Image 1 (cartoon, rainbow, N blue to C red):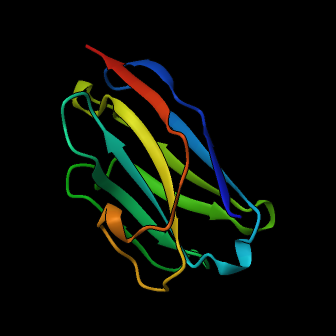
Image 2 (cartoon, helix red, strand yellow):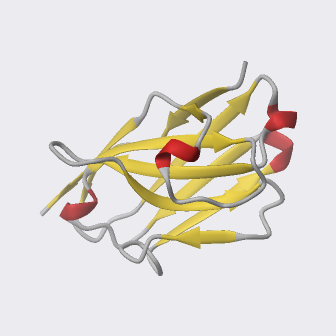
Image 3 (cartoon, rainbow, N blue to C red):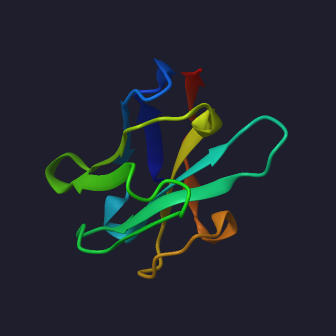
Length: 124
């Protein structure tokens, strides 16, 4: 059974940076795409970024393009989300997700496995 564990969330000031990590274990051979999503209070879960397992292909939401970078460390089965120039509107619970299909996807329902989430709060 694939398990995803996020870490790295916290409280940061407007304009600050955070680096989220997602450790993947159990059945990693079946995973081809990883993604980050976020959910703010009272809002639907929204796509942030996605990457293929080799790290050669990425895609970002327009709202984070140029500020966030998704990457992966194959040896450690870990995916990262480097978040720079953070804004108060980035405040949300951030979730790591994995899917078996080889195609990148922005829809949460297309992902097969989810982590428990990590809170990111950006103060103004």
